[in-house]
Length: 291
Image 1 (cartoon, rainbow, N blue to C red):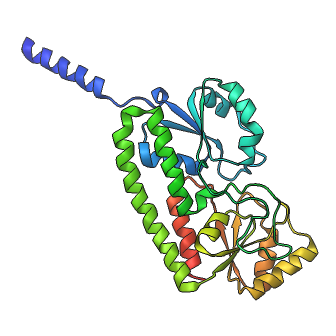
Image 2: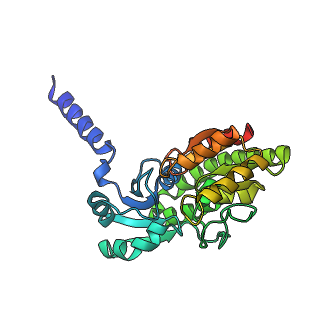
């Protein structure tokens, strides 16, 4: 091997080493509240950043306490992008800020028409209204996710101006996917009119409002229903011809199954907190289309 060839090989090896992708540990860290936010960030930045999820799938966002490992990642985060109005976010805001005072804060609910007060389904039948407050489940409606993505595009561009072009291109691509989902739901609304569905915890309030559907909930004031309320819910399910009852893994499924057995409905597990946001939404919409 000639000296010139050896030098060329070493130079090529050095160049290749310089082109090696940055290790995960060297990526900037962004902390978020729930897994769907990670999905949204990935649509714009792919794997250019590391996303630290504070509330794991299957946990109750109103009562979850973060682990030491999550706090450690939080302390290294350049920003916290909150969903907005989650119980965890309001309860832990001061502690999270104290763990990383230099961390920037952003709110994905900025500019949204939030559902307030007696809000947990589209029409308020007596006895089926949950506790007052601001409903945080904006990410379960494509119309609201369009606002989320617009906010996110601005926040990520501010944090990482070097990726402005990438963020802009990916934003337009994902927006077209949201348009398709929006059109699918609008078509369902046109085809079936006021579609009613029943779920234990009201996770699809914004979807119900945005598309004229009716979300009926089993829980009351954030708790399982009393025997008398359970009886009235069974009668409501019969009146509304409920064929499917949706249940979430983080909540007790006993009452949902009792109602399903009484009215001859099927039970289907949904996971609004899944990282696979698009896949989960399309699965839920497919079930609605079968009603």
